[in-house]
Amino acid sequence: MSTSPVRPNDSAATNFDLLGPETVPADDVEYTAIIAPYDDAPDECTIFPAGLSENELLTTWLSAQEGSYVSLAEMA
Image (cartoon, rainbow, N blue to C red; front, side, top):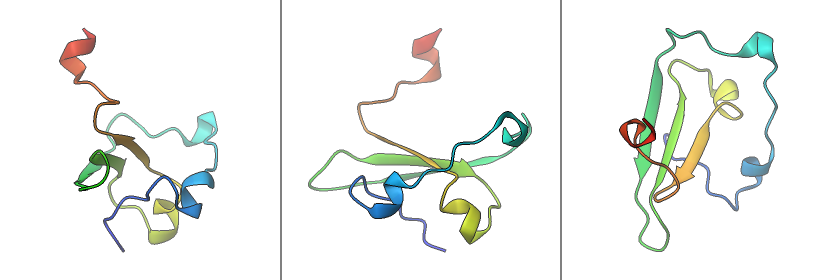
């Protein structure tokens, strides 16, 4: 399993399955965050639930480019 996030132009980046309310993770789920640095683009942070199978990981992640997210303390 690769720990590289999907880039915005990758075909997998446009193939999302919408999660229904019955599939929303419980509060005690652990998450993994990976920061991918890029020389030619903003760094990206990809977050996904820990322990997913390779197939589940294909559609269960969230990526954001540096500058498009803020710390939780800034939201309070």
